[in-house]
Length: 111
Length: 115
Image (tube, each protein chain N blue to C red):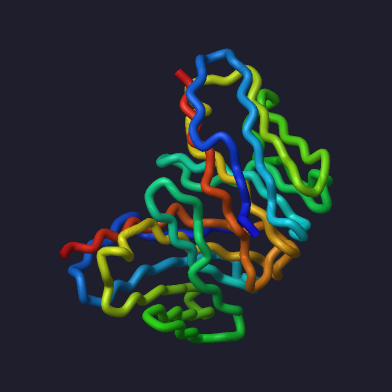
């Protein structure tokens, strides 16, 4: 079955860039997503990328997709303390299956 | 829209008791998903509905778990009897279509503690 892997922890200094990485196994993935979960809250959709794209930029967020290596990354520029949260990568196969989530990367931002 | 609404936010119950978790999806969304989040397993899909009909319940851990969606605006997840290993955060999510650029909208979750 599909599998999505992420590193569990990342620590960065305020003002630096954060890069959160994700690998997935399903070569038929159609949409790939990044969700953010703040303490005590549900998951909030940050951004998504369609599989025919290599890059997507949205303000401080840049998503890179390497389909050959099945690698997805989320770059947060000028990381702020408010960015401290758990970030989940998710993918779906052809839009016909429920989203499969990674275990999440806990980002800690040090002031 | 107020988003996906789950109740209660927190539930503490004794082992063996019945627990019912509730969810109101976003109006107009035709898919509803129940997920369970634990430190060990991350987010697990338990069951999902399309137009109120259960489509895949293969993630439901045991017969002690059941879910219903009597109408488009309400779903329940029931655990009977509850056990300490059921302690987790349970999320409900809804979407328009199975997957698209809209992704899923999640509720705030119900934190269940079984003692």
